[in-house]
Image (cartoon, rainbow, N blue to C red; front, side, top):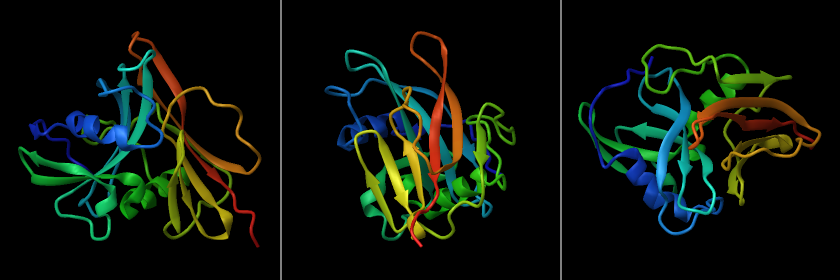
Length: 214
């Protein structure tokens, strides 16, 4: 069980993301992002070593507000071989130095997200210790992919994790109403966040696609 500490972070998560988001192919804002933490949830690392957070941030720097899904992991030491996925480092008031990563490239987050799809893990409240988040829902028809992804690729809206036999996990980085998913979708995670106008929005965060290769 992850413990949520009420303490300081230097720099803050939003400060790190303000510098990092414009480097992503799915970021559509203009100039410097103007970010607000709008929602999200956490998953527990069974080894209680890695913090796992799915944060939703809203950016009001463009002509219209836009919400982004940012899966994050927090570690007490660098993750070997993941230099390309490092968002930045922070000083945590209780835990000391923390390395923040794009969680799509962290095997602990990937394993726990797949476990959540299958019902073997439970979504936790973003800012409260040991409290399930009932707004986050999941479905899965059949087993999730096994093992770790063979590739992680970004486009202008999503990040896709490719697995063996053609299976894929797709995270919707830009949160807006999307067209119906094509055939082959076997799992879905849906969550909610606060829009800048005060309304509560809800959208698909991630989907699983069954494999098609023999």
